[in-house]
Length: 466
Image (cartoon, rainbow, N blue to C red; front, side):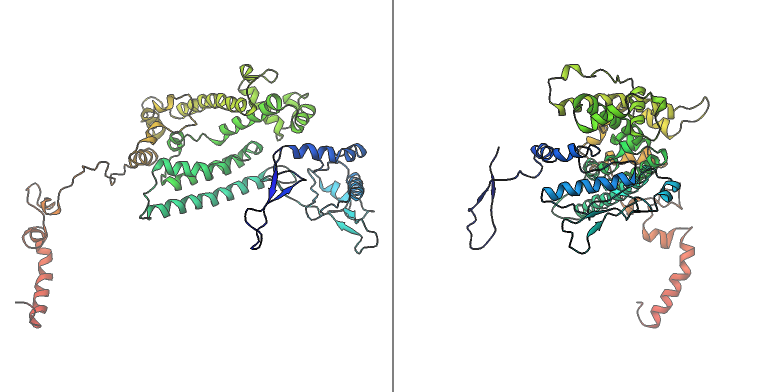
């Protein structure tokens, strides 16, 4: 075990002076959960209803939950500890109005019992107990849970955090654009910045969001965010395909299969894996509720022909866990890329005699780019060093017009103003400079002559016209 040292910042103590720490572990140590399990083992044996994790008490009866609080409090008193009631909350899932009335309302375990609470270790103190509040939403590791587990609040929070990340990306891009000591970000750099800051907000808890309307809301927000960062507005089909960002519904399939692979193959001895195996694996698919996570995991594995009993990567059993999970992810990405490619081709189909639409035109242009096995990577043309060509192509594919204001070559030349022909005198090739337009053009000079005469008269009154 590595040695831990502590340095105290004080003007009298030398900077090189350190103190050895003989107790405790560094924050995030892998040994901490094991030591915690040993420390609370007597609590688990004394109260069999309490799960080994201890951080969550689960019960289907409010009165039983209150008795579990008392058991935990007695254990903490014996071990010279105290429950932090400010961080301890109660949340009820799938409770009907009838059950709520039967237990006496919110915060009540029973009509004849006081609200949820824990007693203080000193009976003579005032007050003698601390209440434990009942809440309607709870955030755990960035995921907001609601009483019905609809994950609607998680969707709203993901969109809010993505908007904050988008504002940060736009601010960085704007500052670098007008910074004289740095150059403007290219399209590839802007895309990489967006993928590192904004995209993880949409993907963080995607596997838990199961309502189609919520996934569509996330997809709309993702499309608008990517369009605003790259300034490419219009149809999003080509934009998502060229930047290597599949629809969120397909990305969710990858996350669900990865979660199943982790629970059954790479980490089968963890607590989530044991609960997953014990509670749901014995039920057939048609008996599972469509809102449960297990239903969506098993539906995805069935749709993509993933065997639930065998290891899809038997040749990597001796490899580290991270390598196995990465290889499985890459395998599923190729499968999802094939499905996504088929969806793009189906959406671009046109009937006989019907003019090709924007999606069909995109398929014809990007035919070679769509032949890659992994469509999760950006198209090859986005890696061109010149920073305007990729942007021009993305804008041309997304809009109904072609932006011709961009100069695509350093050798681009244009006709000087004095050498341009007068448009009113065509087909005669007469240079349309100011003298011709104001004085000699037979079409325009009669219109301007009265204004010239009036100006000359006013100037002569003040001796300003020679």
